[in-house]
Image (tube, rainbow, N blue to C red; front, side, top):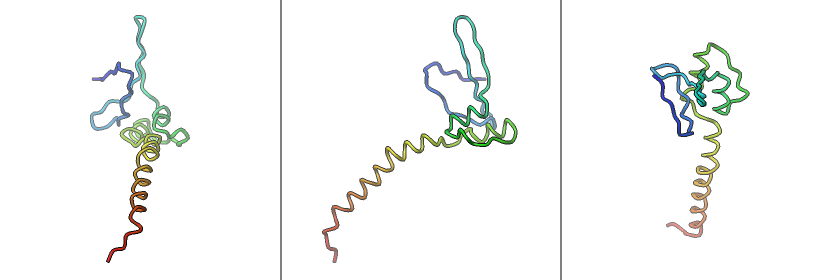
Length: 102
């Protein structure tokens, strides 16, 4: 069984274990279609690990990247949400420095 998205949004990388399927690229149009599996290197690039040294079997490599945390996404969240939340929290603390607690 395979799931095919046609909305232009990429699904997540999933592991080839536990009943999940491998990631398949499908190119269709003009009465033709072609399908192939993503390579471990393509999975590494999608996860932001372009220079990662991949060793082991195909399944081990795909398992390592499937269901993993995507580095560029975490960097974006940290920059756009976490840093602002911490800066806002620190700014709130500064407003109360003049208060004296007995």
